[in-house]
Image (cartoon, rainbow, N blue to C red):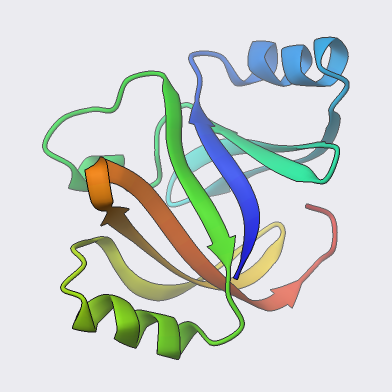
Length: 132
């Protein structure tokens, strides 16, 4: 399991992207849309930051999420084994396991709530464009 990115909810994608690129020294890699949500991907060192104006799963929650941290994403090699472990542990899913396609390629993903309410995603890369 490897850290793939942090996701952050921002009020203005352009302003936040500019801040992370120009002030923090990040590299703008990609702009796209997934689950009806616009996003930006930046790299700061070896870490990706995904910026959203709303979380891809936000409509599934009881209340809108505030600005700031949304979730952390871990890349896994065996998605099915990880899903089985989560189910066995009784972990509540926010968004059920599924396969998606976006500008950075195809992914198998699931969103869940870890202890203390930390929203977490695991994903397995199916195909990768290499631009994120």
